[in-house]
Length: 173
Image (cartoon, rainbow, N blue to C red; front, top):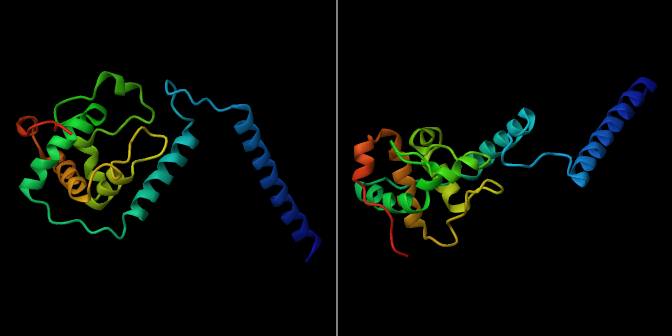
């Protein structure tokens, strides 16, 4: 190995070690602001969002969605209105006031559901998302119920506020 290659390799390893030490210093000193009243630094927001999107898409890759029926959509409406509406809002309805302080802000599913496939919505509902406030409903709900919820969420972007309001809300569990 030539001296120039050795020097470049040593410089690259040194830079990686330095960056790791800086990251460790930030972690150990609490040097990163974790307050939900502040947004992430742009690079941190990008890294978290990109990781989240790619992880969900990869995890849901092998999941096959059933054909959604009107009965599934109607059944999913009650679960959505009971468990999801306060954070994600509804069609023509905002989220609960307290949810505005969440970071990351839960997406408004009346529009954001277009960005996710049905298997991805199912996976998100079943497994939740760490450090986001999104709980995992898989441990407390069966897959049929979660598919109903996914069917309703995927239908939301096509609903009018009147259609959304016409669905019954909430269940007694």
